Image (cartoon, rainbow, N blue to C red):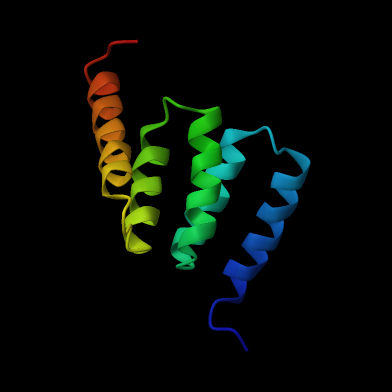
Length: 100
């Protein structure tokens, strides 16, 4: 048996949710985070890219997208990884300071 059967069930459910709500950035975010937990870096990046496209002001999506890039090795993509992380920091500071 797989050591994490609940993660597989969660992924199946999130796959279904994304199929039903492909326009929903939050659903893509949730599946992207699960892909990170499963160490499926390319799938995580794909979902988190979809999320930041739909929800560009979501700092956690930028931070997790950065993690997915770094975990893949990000060879030749250092600038992209740094921009993702910078976006996460800037947005976090912006919302923390209460500028909306």
